[in-house]
Amino acid sequence: MTLPESSTAGGGPVRLDGPWTHRDVAANGARFHIAEMGEGPLVLLLHGFPQFWWTWRHQLPALAEAGFRAVAMDLRGVGGSDRTPRGYDPANLALDITGVVRSLGEPDAALVGHDLGGYLAWTAAVMRPKLVRRLVVSSMPHPRRWRSAMLSDFSQSRAGSHVWGFQRPWLPERRLVADDAALVGELIRDWSGPRPVADEEAIETYRRAMLVPSTAHCSIEPYRWMVRSLARPDGIQFNRRMKRPVRVPTLHLHGSLDPVMRTRSAAGSGEYVEAPYRWRLFDGLGHFPHEEDPAAFTAELVNWLKDPEPDR
Image (cartoon, rainbow, N blue to C red; front, top):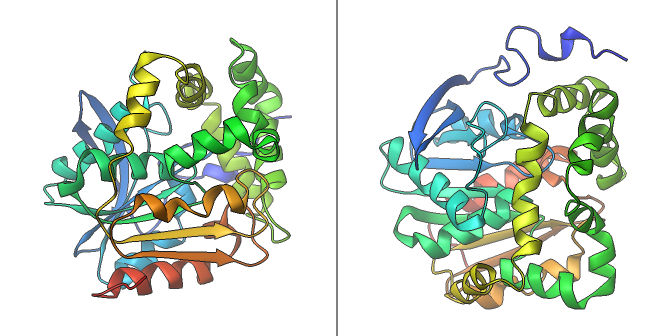
């Protein structure tokens, strides 16, 4: 099967056309692709696996209309960003994010992260608190909660079985790109709730982006670090470092039917937040609430970002 060109007409597999503009910025020793639109306080959007910046296509125009400078970046190794041979540990990836904030000439940003992007948003808020104005995390617990759940909760460990599978050499990459990245479409469909995340054309767009050379390998590397470092000094040090509380207002969003990250694994992350913390559970949604019900997700996001005093 050959994917049709219509799925990426005009912009190639990554720089898709839309009301946004594309450019590259330098940060933390690498080059990062961003899509941006609007003016105002910076909101930096961070994608998860197996996606890229385009997952925020619904939120970019809505945030711009609400008076924000909305920027969606491709993480290191994905989309239009550099594919470096190393640097996929969460501490370095978080420095990528805060480095982009600086490169954009902004004093700080509201970070909005989904899945792996959420894991890194938590990390950035701890490592560089002065550069994070607010924190929004979807479908991902605090890193210490993630670690605990994956090691001690059999149901969560089984739900996140793909993470364990990524530890094998080379085979996961080959599976991701086999049959024109058919597995990407399967994962997105399987991890969604009853509402479809996207139509077939959108699924093909995600598949095509995964086929860009080295993307599959780079997409898996952060998960390899997360598991292989569990008993290593660098992983233990990172886990200790994440004991530091988050001291910015935090909005935590989750789909009640998320089959990848169970609700009880994500709930309770507020214990690591010493600031207003708001938990919102979207009934009937799966792992991609920002795509499964973009209107509800975006309304929750924008209203909270515009609230001058978000309560608990």
